[in-house]
Length: 517
Image 1 (tube, rainbow, N blue to C red):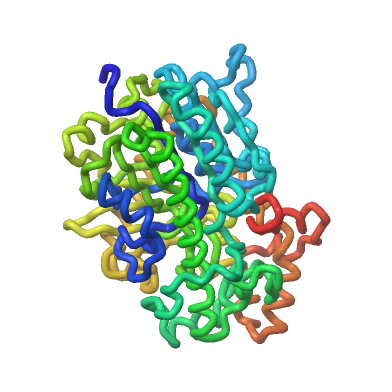
Image 2 (cartoon, rainbow, N blue to C red; image 1 turned 135 degrees about the horizontal axis):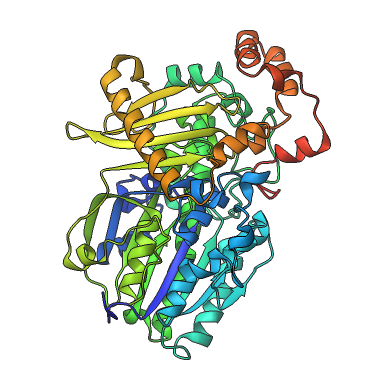
């Protein structure tokens, strides 16, 4: 495409851990997101967008590079797999993250690129800065609230609204990420109404008999504690009141971020640039709130962790349509480059659908493959068969959770992943495995190296946040009456069960709350 008049200014609101199905515009029953819902009514809501890699560090690395973690080397949060592959003698004066990155492509299309985010410092992801003209780090390592970040963006808009013809401003909000730091005096009216529960007493009993970091009896990590400083993340899930407390904590955080987004949009309107600004709302990944017995975290390659919202309000408004096609998140990045009049780098795995987007048509992918390497080693295959959507999960390391090697879920009738149907659907399982093998072949053909970084995670001792934690966790399982669960993990991970815990292991087990993770 040539230079498009569709794009002049772009505001990209990146809300960490925001899952689509807790937004009103995606059908949620509670009023968590009136501002985002209004944007959706005036723009385009994408229903089936996935982050290719999760969680935070792999996801944003993939989006900003336009490439799968298989090719960049970044699939985890620590060890070798938290760093891009070394380019060695192939590296030029500037590395490939600059030459082929999303921000560089937008700069070449004439945009002033800026970010207000502490993400790179939080994860030591310095490669992520490539291509930004301007970097503003709020300095809180991801503990900042919206009321601390949005005022910086409002000031930026006041300075740049007219000073630079075309700009791209990335804004990072962390409120929806545990431990849900919303002020205690912020209590939206919807708290009077209970959410619709998909968990009942029988499911909760099964979860409490389960195991794993962030499972029902260890909802804040590997132990049964909670942090009194963060009452909205209540700790172990003993009964349905605790289930509601977790959901309330999450939903209130969404509403708090949404209200501050409203103030940000108000700043665009005051400066007279709202009608020529594209507003994008998305996330780096979702958040499991009980799915797979994971509470308040993102630890797998499933649809709950990897599906992200994508709401796009075009300059001037108008629209209100829904795109139900399957896209990787970096497909949208590629599309945005073309809409801005730029050229998608040849190295990208992301594929633009700009022509279809402008025409109001859907043009997506037949299936998607997702990868997780921080809390488990897993790949997900998201596909359709006979007109129905399914997800298959292939687990290489369970992250000390109750995850079998292969699972299959009907994504339409079982969106919360309660009933594993793999044993009864061998043909669907076989089809999913064939799709995964074909994807791996494509990755091997396109990769500059000869290493699957998920294998590196396995060789370095397993998922970073789990390293060294199993011996102490086995003791806890036995203390809490889960002897059989302890034996299961010992059989699965005999070498880890014997490993002594070191100081570095304790650091490795840190979650994504106060500590970088």
